[in-house]
Image (cartoon, rainbow, N blue to C red; front, side, top):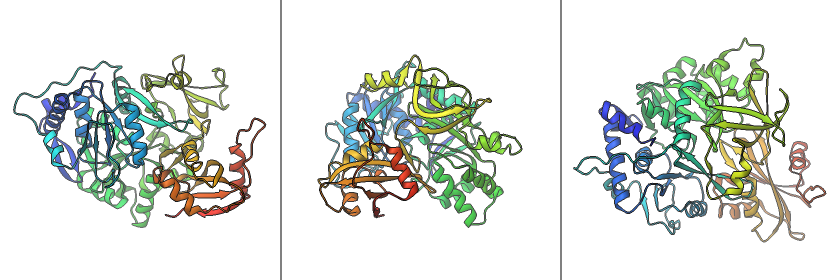
Amino acid sequence: MNLAHDVARWALSHPERPALFEGARPTATYAQWAARAAALAQHLLGAGLYPGDRVVLFMRNHPRYLEILFGVWWMGGVVVPVNAKLHPKELQWIAHNAGARWAFVSRDALPEGAPALAGLERVVDVDSPEMASLLAAEPQASLPVAARAPDDTAWLFYTSGTTGRPKGVMITHRNLRTMALGYFVDVDTVGASDAIVYAAPMSHGAGLYALPHVLAGARHVVPPSGGFDAAELFELGRQVGPLSLFAAPTIVKRLVDHAEAQGLGPADAARSFKTIVYGGAPMYAADIQRALKVMGPRFVQIYGQGESPMVGTALSRADLADQGHPQYLARLASVGRPQSSVRIRVADEAGQDVPTGEVGEVLIAGDSVMAAYWQAPEATAAALREGWLWTGDMGCLDASGYLTLKDRSKDLIISGGSNIYPREVEEVLLLHPDVAEVAVVGAPDPEWGESVVAFVVARGALALEATALDAHVVAHLARFKRPKRYVQVEGLPKNNYGKVLKTALRERLQANASGTDLGQSPP
């Protein structure tokens, strides 16, 4: 069940079909894509790598991303996708923990002068002549796709946890095939003339949505900017045909802002976009109503986790359009119904189902759920119990099976679609010699969904400075994880067991009774 077979299949049946694009410019047919993936696989095997070996992809969205991804799978390897916004120190930790042997990096993701990935056998710049030679096919017959079992790991995705260290989520070929097939049932139909554009990071859900589009023999488009630019995407859709994409609510909001500013309506949006799947963070009901009014019925919502990638629930295009339904507003605030390949329960701490409408922890079971956490048996045992994934998300199910998320039992902050775990930020701030205690929480943000706020207690009678704290955080973590606001307090609220009461801190933010506000972080 090697996922690379999907590219090989189209290379045989429709070799000249356009497959990969940089903007409106074709860069590979399906035959060329398969030949390059097979050539890379041959070079990896020739260099002594074996099926099951881990290979890091630390790249911003790039025309070669999918060639490398499928080349690693072609030889039976395991891809370790790393968010290109991470700090080099975080990248180094992930590569070491995964036991990776090779890495492919883009120049804009790993700044010049940044420390090289220590301990790896080879780090390849994807824009270098070396990369071109690795993708060059040999004249002899193409290497066959390596045989892989359904439960072999394909995608080792690192997601942070409450311990403050990332955990490697072992996603198998079966997990990803389940997600890809479910897309056609629960999210959208796809045909060979369709095109998916990668405006969100390909190291995350946006990249995984390549799989159903490969199954359908569709086109794959990386925008020239390598990321999100609303004007660019509207124009690109007009050039190559209506685009599909995965977008965090922040991206949806900016697309709508652009459409309004340019006087564009639903008919204009339909020329540029076929389907916009949104997820990864809460979407306010008012925001999706505005998006539907400005851009028309282009939207589908999904809810999933790294541990059940892109598979949990879906709020369909039909649900979003059914304004006459008596439960319409409640459904807009939900994340939809369970996708076809999973079962979802809401349970209490003992694992017993709670009554309809009551809040409990969301549990997911099905073939999309991860095999385990990499080399973390205790974390695996806590998350996977009797066939169910305990998500850490709190929610309730209504009588029709629609799931509404209420809160998270974990302290995860989702800002602009990116996951930020407070413990990571807290541990870095505690390394500062002037900080005695710290607690990090998320605050509602109309643009980003949530923003990071750090409550800090100084050592002695010191007066802390936001600029100094910010510089310290940026030296250790990716910039998107840094607090947007620092608040100095005399002490942190705690319960009788000494645990910080973050609920009380959030209440302080709402009441504007937070202590000495040190101000916003520098841009």
